[in-house]
Image (cartoon, rainbow, N blue to C red; front, side, top):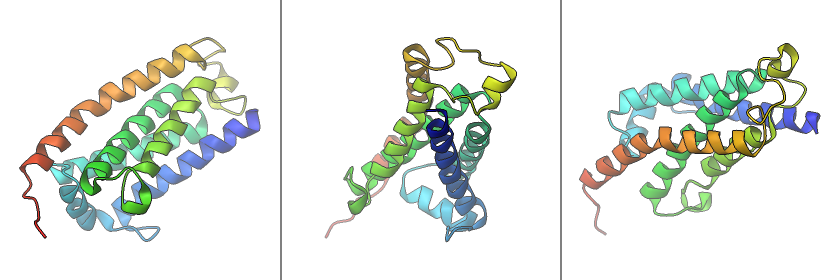
Length: 176
């Protein structure tokens, strides 16, 4: 089980790192900062320059925390909240949940996977376990930890989602 949790943490961290560096530097076929700001404007993420940098910071910090298994509930919360916002933004822009139609299916799955880590804890191969920061308690993994992370992530994502909703409502709709 511990190897599986390590693999899950590493996978999510790698994807978050790639997403952040796509936006920040254009790595991994990404848009780079200027084009990412344009994309965020289309997504209703205003002010785009601030929201892009916030997304980059959140994705990088969550990636580092998850890869190390350090302050794992915090890393899981940041990842979950960030991916909820990304998923919601894509769903409202493209009016579809499914990734095949440009929807937010993929970031929602990433949010759920990060939440799973909160329910299970980081496993034995984590700094939290090695140095005893989060000893095996209900807060280090289990129903209570998972619930706290999911609720906290939802509360953290809510203002950005509401802001996105307001921005999208102000954008002119294109008619065919």
